[in-house]
Length: 320
Length: 262
Ligand SMILES: Cc1cc2nc3c(=O)[nH]c(=O)nc-3n(C[C@H](O)[C@H](O)[C@H](O)COP(=O)(O)OP(=O)(O)OC[C@H]3O[C@@H](n4cnc5c(N)ncnc54)[C@H](O)[C@@H]3O)c2cc1C
Ligand SMILES: Cc1cc2nc3c(=O)[nH]c(=O)nc-3n(C[C@H](O)[C@H](O)[C@H](O)COP(=O)(O)OP(=O)(O)OC[C@H]3O[C@@H](n4cnc5c(N)ncnc54)[C@H](O)[C@@H]3O)c2cc1C
Image (cartoon, rainbow over all chains, first blue to last red; front, side, top):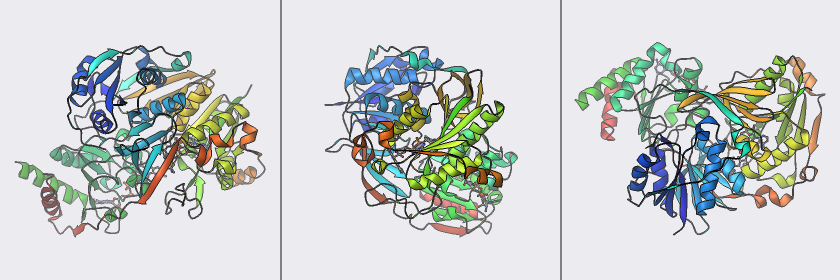
């Protein structure tokens, strides 16, 4: 059976959920071979094996952290040369897309980004994309070279399928051109203890209607009652009420949770672009004409400062 | 020598219009107004600021690959203050994918000459966010992308990249490819003077043969990818909308419970 390379997104060996989704999708096409760069391969291998990786190609080098993107491309290319895979799957993060893009150029292959589903096809893997702010769904294929496909988080439910997951060292030599952009310093984000926005099953977002940073705890309290991540519209971010890393939309994160709750958000096209593929959508807005109501499964026309706290209390009491 | 800055700008269908696909499954550009991709305005703005910081000792060229109407996008960038424009236009480019677009842009950049390439973070139509990385790869120069802050000094570009896990301070020697985010600073509006001046600024037109590119390397035929199907997403079935009469939160909780979220 053909092998499929899966680029592993992890934090020191803790494998992030989108990678497990990729392994699950990879199994529809062939045998997943994971590529793990940086520390923690042995820890990660156990998880990767559980979700179907037959092999884990591992490389650790200071270059991965010291220089931007390109050293990772060198490593993924080395894995590609070692395996001759049927496809290369990479998580659709900003960095993942850049790694995939450079690999595609190097190996002369087509690339498809932001797939939301993947199936085997007679002429190679078929990727589903959601485009034009999710107004259209397309099915695309790579027609030249080895398909390089980036897949959005929450595109599949991870399914365990134990395999060997044997760790093999991957020899990587870094090109002179790959060490051109130095990472001079790195300031890690403070953890909020909440789920990762793109991976969360539930997202609660606040917009301009929240009317001030001091009111965002109202949104956070609802999120915490549901174990949800917190999002924000660009209006709320631009006003300085909430960090940009939490922005949902075209120039923020694209999320596809089971449940999306928008409070005080009007539903501009650029906001929709980042949340319209959510399974269930709920909105609270005092303007009955707000475009967000065109998308909702359930909407409450009302003041969020009355509705949201009541909802939070009700959830807490139901959960006991 | 003065700094040669080239800003890559894309002409896109207006996102607030009713965007759809043509029969050959490429973007229908006839029924929706086109404009300069808004996210590329941020790239033009940073180029202007870098030029200002260099006391004007820089030349800004805006470069687009696109149909005839893409000239509008170039004019907008020129009216913001760019010095000249290059338009790569060829019927054989219709339907070109990201690999092909980056090939044409890279050849055009080599043709024009550059010390610093500035791109937007993503287009507002395809929105792949891959072209700048592809350009760095093709040109063999450093990739300094997704910056929310950028500075050029002493032949070096530095900037801040706000990633998911960390915020990184980056540095690379020129020549380099940079992309900037919408956090890099509001783009200026063209002034009346700027709009008038833009009419006299030079726009060079190039086709594939000028760049030594074979027609079969680009366009729909030459694509590395193909779209087999494009379907309009079925409209979401109308949801339940209630007016809060004091019980809105509780009603919503009831809905969430019925959907097993609580
Ligand atoms: C190139 C580009 C990229 C963009 N990218 C993004 C992006 O990534 N994400 C994004 O979100 N936007 C993005 N935008 C901006 C987008 O166009 C909108 O301006 C933005 O989404 C508006 O945010 P909002 O809905 O919070 O604010 P508004 O549109 O001002 O809506 C606020 C809503 O809150 C309601 N409200 C007010 N008070 C209350 C209350 N007490 N209770 C209940 N409801 C209340 C109002 O009725 C209103 O509907 C982008 C724009 C451009 C041009
Ligand atoms: C809905 C949709 C989905 C698509 N999916 C795919 C796909 O999966 N695979 C694929 O190979 N192609 C795809 N394409 C085609 C692809 O969008 C175009 O080839 C495009 O020129 C490059 O990608 P982008 O617009 O996403 O650019 P991005 O990588 O998002 O653009 C980033 C920056 O690159 C510069 N840039 C991009 N295009 C140009 C240009 N023509 N002229 C000047 N500067 C430019 C701009 O500075 C821009 O801000 C898709 C197109 C659409 C409309």
